[in-house]
Image 1 (cartoon, each protein chain N blue to C red):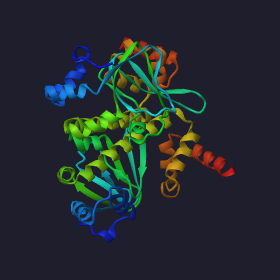
Image 2: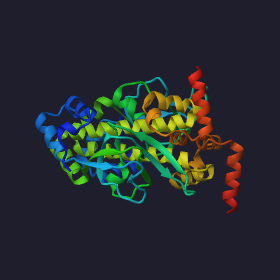
Image 3: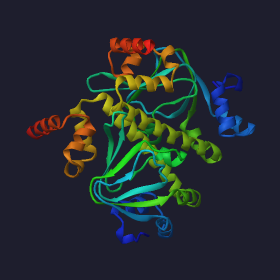
Image 4: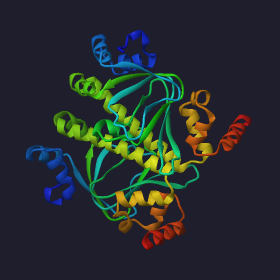
Length: 199
Length: 199
């Protein structure tokens, strides 16, 4: 389903109009490559074994991205809300199947652009490519930070980092997933919350 | 100190001649921007608080990249050997101070290119930019993998992953750093090694 400007989350418009500085024509041209896609709570947008072939912006809702280990245990890598981009960039650029799962935690809407359009856009619209390259750099820096946080901090530090980076997570993500992200038991999360509340 | 072709590690030549497909002239032009820089075992190439302003390829030797937590404990993110690129890409592109440390584990040699040259090169030599963008994508994918490995696997899984990705690490990196990377005690690493050897 094609996308009209009125449907767009303000962060999407702000990004491309104010930060990437697309002209109105460029913005409309780019938007012409996107389609809106609805996905119900608990459904998966992406599963391990699939090849990911679309750029995907979260226009509405909240997702969790996770990997599964050989024992079937899930490990949450991050939560994504409005204004975030989701998917597996390695699968997108290599055509190899992903190891990741992306699941909707609410009724969600994505803005999707197929790789064939992306390939055209980075040539036709250098500002789009510049932005995309910057986005990958930022995503890379964020991945290093999460990895480093996870290695260096206590569960309390990780909780504080999550809180400062994505305060909305606490309202929108079920506790069991927050505990899973922190790799602690739900009871430990309750104790942490109580402790923070009493401070 | 400027760099002559005979000094270069074969992986560096192969990368730019065969993979990036630079012509001889393009290769020499790019090489003109690099300088060789020696660094003694145990010395730091980068420390938290510094701004990283150079592209850096490992021409000889082995490094560890680590972060420090508020308790002064070090957390090793990865080991880098010949053919790897080191530094803090976020600091490079934003001009903000890094949180990372990079230390030589052997007598090492780096090939360094200042950001001012990098900025020129990505404009003058589109093949260089294409390669750089691909490199960032791969580094991002590798960071996600390390983060995901670290979340999902046991110490034994992490050891096996390290072994399959960088077998040389076992010969070149002191056991205490391998144990630190796996976030286990040195005695647990000895047990793991014995177990693997008996398999």
